[in-house]
Image (tube, rainbow, N blue to C red; front, side, top):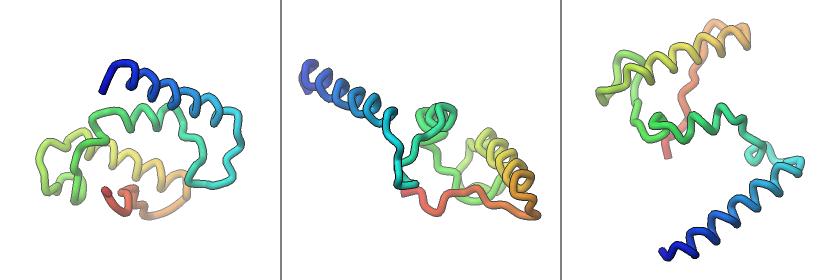
Length: 93
């Protein structure tokens, strides 16, 4: 891809982001994501397979994923005053 093409596409994405900041999304799935959540999505976490449960993964190298999952389970239980919580996404696709 030519540099000018990449710059054009980047500018259109930035234009969209600016426009969307001024909108009130009425579709839940299109709502604004917090900056912290966006930061997590551009981290290496977004590209890791972490199938299974903390400490019992099918793939190695998930020590920090396990720690984050355990902490988010703890927080979800606290926020929702629940005995159990599952923070895993329904699907990885």
